[in-house]
Amino acid sequence: LCQFPDTLYDLDMGIDFPEQQPLPTVAEVLALPEVQAGAPDLAAGQHGLNKPVRWAHVAADTNIAKAVDGGEVVLMTATAWPDDPRKQAVFTDELIAAGISAIALELGRGLDSAPDQMIRSCDAHSIPLIVLHHEVRFVQITQRVHQRILSAQTEALQAREEVHKMLTELGLNRSPVD
Image 1 (cartoon, rainbow, N blue to C red):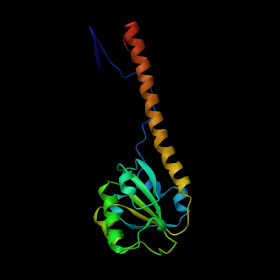
Image 2: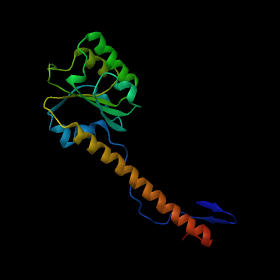
Image 3: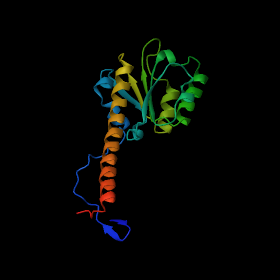
Image 4: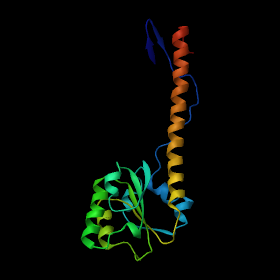
């Protein structure tokens, strides 16, 4: 019910608005064909699979924690991974402190498995650590994730616009809502 001056309106107009899709979860990102092409294994953080993914970001170096705002899936190759175990620990802890939702680590180029310290840290904070055993195209993953997020936002904006138009028309015409 909505109150306009001197009139009470029932706003249940029977309009079928598209449901606003929530942000994709880490589990949904993991299920994408583009991710599945990398023969993924969940190495840690199983309890975090329902975390929402706000964005996908590719890590080119160890300064990535400064570039994220939280809620991202960070996609990285061994090239971005530090060699020194102490730097590995700092790098992982900085990513976790930045509030990321998950890490997808593509093996290869000298990295045959996820480092034990990274697995322990991700598990301790319920951050899913997805290990990709085959090379994937990160651009395809980011496009798919971003497409899903933007599509949900567009649908929500369109539904809001429809309600706004209807209420504006009713207000200008001072018509009761039936």
